[in-house]
Image (cartoon, rainbow, N blue to C red):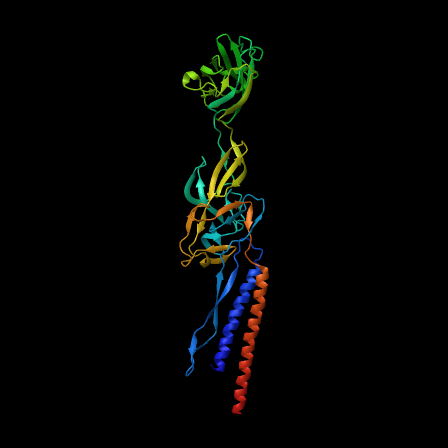
Length: 424
C-alpha cells in the first residue's frame, strides 16, 4: 500500500468517525424526546486491494451507514387520557402537511390532544387516523380522521320501566282516589322517565290493595302533559297485579296514556313488574307479595336525556369511548396502528415522524392488539430509547478513533516529506 493510499484510508476513517459522532450527538440531543428510537453507526470495509507477491489483501478504508434501532422504550405515566403509548409493534398514523410534505406519516410519539374542531391531533396539528364510528357508536372499519371532541348523545324516549320489590300481603284494603293518591294508596315509589325530546318527567307509582288484588297508578305533574294542569298529578298509566298464596305474580293488566307536552304523542310506555306465572314465568322475578313490608329493591328505565361530552377514555385496543353528561357512554372511534415488515427502514422527516419507503415494505393497518400489532396504554408516553451512559462511552471511542486516523494522516505526511527530502 502506498503512502497516498494510507492517507486516503485514514481519511475514510475520519469521515466515518464524523458520521458516528454526528449520530451520537443526535442521540444525546434526543434523550428526552418522546418515542425517539436511538440510532447507531454501522461500519463496513471499503474495497480492498491485493498485494503483488504477498498473500492476503489490504483494505482501503471504511464506510459508515446509520441504522435505527427499533427497540421499545419504557413508559412514563402522565394522567392525560389523550396521551397514548404503544407497547409492542407498530406506529400511530397521522395525516396532514409537515415541512412541505403532505400525506400519511407514522410515529411512536403519542402526545395527542383534541383541537378546536374536535379532532384528535398530534403536537404539530396533524390528525390522528383511526376507525371512525357512527352516531350509534358502531365502528365502520374505514380509517379516517378521528372526531372525538364535540360529540353529543341524542335523547332516547323511555319505553319500559322495570321494577323489583315487594307488596305487603297484609296491607289494608283501600279505594284509590286520583285526587288524593297519597292517602288512598298503601305504597308508592318514584322513577324518572324521558320523552322523545329528552325532557324528564318525575313519575310516582301508587299501589293500592283491594279485595280482588293490587291496583297501581303511575302519575306525573300535569304541567308536562298535553292538556294537563301544572301542580296536578295526572295518571299516565294504570293496571292491576294478582298474586297467589306463595306471593308469586300470577296475572297483570296495564294501559298507558302518556302524552308529554311538545313531544311524540302518545308515547308508548310499558311497566315490567316481572313475568307472571300465567305468562310462563315464575312470578318471582319482579314484584312479589310476601308478608314483609312493602319496598322497592330496584327500578330502572331505558330512556335518557341528551348529553354533552364530559370526558374520553381509551382502551388497550385503541377504542375511544366518550362519557357524557347524562351518564351514557358511547364509542367515538378506534385508533389505528400500522406495522411494517422492516420498520428500521422508515425515513425520518423530523418532528418524531417517519414516512414510508419501499425498503420498509407495505404497512399493515389494524386495531391495536390484533395481528401482532402493539396495544395502547392511555395516560402514558413511550420514552426515548437512548442510554446516555452508552452514548458517552461510544463518544470516547469515536474520539480516539478520530485521533488515531488523524495521526495516520500526519504520519503519512511526514514520511512523504522525507521522501521528497531524499530527492533533494
